[in-house]
Image (cartoon, rainbow, N blue to C red; front, top):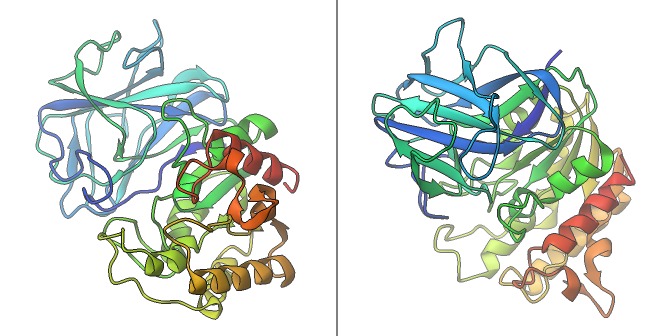
Length: 374
């Protein structure tokens, strides 16, 4: 039985949020991506998504290995991947491609490299904008480049790779569903200190990060992904071994209409708490077979998302999450991270600096709070 051990939610190719290679795509190049697994096993398979592609993408070859420093692969761990027994394959337009399982012993918390070679132009690439870890590109076929010296360009996004599964046989996975706070914005890049990473380490359970920076519950965005009520099935329900979801979403629906600093999402609709509550209920209807934990929105006072209307709406939504009884259980992240002297603001010790996103210490507090209700 395969268990999803790592995920990245697919996004439409775009450059409005962070510099990346999604619009230019790849041609006669190799791409090496490093991901940290939250479940171990003896066999590994990958899933490649081209959810936003209008034509098929040819994968000329792929390889897998245990990660070493930078783009290097641990000695003796590099193995070729196959697809239906073949070395090459195509990701269909608006579809996905799953590799055959490869023999590779991995432990929970260990990082692996996935290398893809493209010998034909891919066109714009379905991707995940904010990885907060480095991926690598080089010219030509570098599938067996173990020391990584051929990879001369770097990015902090993931491309095509949407999931890694292991034969852990686990059915107690936890999917975290949210926006940039779930994605890990504000954590130290390259250190795997998102709250998903910390939660996996604390609990020993597979933890999947289904966050997208800027994501909204009720509206699509060219830069910030499909709305949460639409992508929940693909990014949570379609993964293997998940029995619990944690929902932390709605902050951008409330806050984008308050700020003048979001040219990539203007004009933002003005939403009331009742509309957001209806969106949360739509997620709950779709997740009937899962245990679903509702997380209160974090304090946002002093941020560019804050204003009188945002205060009123966020307070009302949090009150519903706490008191409605519609979630199986609740984790009150607002109270866990609030400044005791000003509960509408993040505690200074947990503030990344924008009064909206936690830092490493704040993400650790979030993981600890969630671990107590799992």
